[in-house]
Amino acid sequence: MKRRVAALAGVLLALGVASVALAGFVHPRGGRDVEVRLMAGKFAFDPPRLTVEAGDRVTFRIRSRDVTHGFAVEGTGIETTVLPGREARVTVPAAHAGKLRYRCSVVCGPLHPFMVGEIVVRPNPWPLGAGALALAVGFLASAGGLAATRRWDLTRSRALRWLLAWRPLQFALVAPNLAVFTLIVVAGLAGTSTGATNFSTIFVWLVWWGLLVLVLIPLGGRLWCAMCPLPAPAEWIARGAIVEHRVRGFGLGRAWPKALQNIWPAFGALFLLVLFGIVITTRPLVTALLLAGFAVAALGIHLVFDRRAFCRYVCPVGALVGVYANVSPLELRARDLDVCRRCREKACFRGGDAYPCPTFQFPGGGLQRNTYCLLCTECVKACPYDNVAVRVRSFAADLGVSRGRRMDEAWLTLLLLGTALAHSVVKLGPWGTVKSWANFERPTDFALYSALFAGVTLVALPALHLGTAWLSRALARTPGFKLSRLFVDYAYALLPVSLGAWMAFTLAVVAPNLSYVPRVLSDPLGWGWDLFGTRETTWTWMPVAALPWLQLGLVLAGLWGSVRAARAIVAEVIAEPRARRRALLPLTLLLVAIAWAFVTLYFG
Image 1 (tube, rainbow, N blue to C red):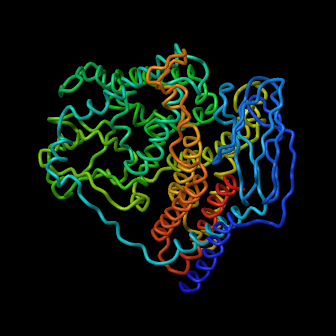
Image 2: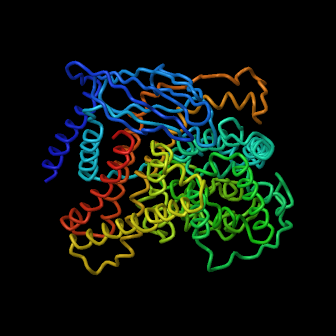
């Protein structure tokens, strides 16, 4: 059986690689001269998408229906400015099969970074080839054995141990971010209302978000939470100290309501955040008010409730980072559980020479996953036995831990996956009508968009996931298993492919727009300054033509991790090998279909 699976996967892998690799060498005989009348307007091209044959030469006759726009083809040097009342002509050679994306290159308003169009050059092998690759990856990941998780203790290093136990460490991490946060709020309140030229939106939604999704989460888990400036002033006020340890602070220290001791509040906040995502990410004032609002909410909650209740139960970014932190290779755990069992003080949880765990975690017992560990290192400082370790382990090791799986986390996972798909359509797609709906230009249109968004994220995707769990149970012939348990357990297998999709999406947003970073450094408020001589820069950091390959790699890597996690989760539930293979099949196919949907959206 394993040999058949490997052989089939090898055939699919060869077909996929061949299809995609040959895309650059498809040259039909001859080639046509194609003329296209293109209208540029806020914030879409009309037509938004056209299909030609490889070898054609496409001449665009471009006019603007409102303000000055630009026309630039990604991965080429083709660019022109489109002035109102004048026609611009540009010829684009469709030399290779695949997809070309063009975008507006002159700042024209809030949605300027997402004003794109597409040229599909046939025969386009990317969707079929990437689909074959996804099937091959799915089959290969579902075969073979599961390797034991290996761990390496970083705190064996004396220098690192000293650094983590150093009391001012967190302040040293938070302070520079707090200064940047202050500048972001000031720029959002006082600077230009155009997001592409304001320090606030560029540094939050390009720099911070890019670093968070592409670096910090996949490599460091909740490392951002250790340096986040939003709750820091509130925590300092509630403690009555900034760096030193004080036993009594100014907060009331009340218990968070038992009915809300979950992440449903964070789920609701995150749903609103992603629903209004295109408004928040393109308006500096909204960005500034949102961040200031988070800081005020954190202050109020810190002064009334015990520890970091805001971070544990309310913060939408913390919830997002928390579930994806299970994929990260970095963990903080007790080094020797026997030492923890003999310990009477439990200083890591209750406090002692340092503050108690701000999210009520106990490294010696209940802490088996990264979801709620903020990496604040208070437990490292508090433990009198030097029994807390920071370790590197295999990616996605926490997904095999059955203890602590929760319904609220499962729904949050589905919301994040649905949002990655929805935002890929809205922000990366060429459809201006959908962008205008999401932009809250008319309440009725936004109501329609809200219904569609909620339908995908809260109804269709959960229903598909539930159907997969039901089919898995039926094929395994284990009707005794609760469907709700499978619904929750199987949701954790979605995390790697979901994170891979978010990384692919973020790369496609960040890479073409990085030239705005040096611009806003010289002119943070959009007032015409040029502090460092970089306001007119057109620098780009990488060949944009490499984006499809990087996106494909990220999605397939996520698919591999998801199928391997699915194998481990199904193995926990079902002991009989044949039943286990039958149960795994629907979940594997769902994961392959999700990956295929993303690559088709990006390349089809």
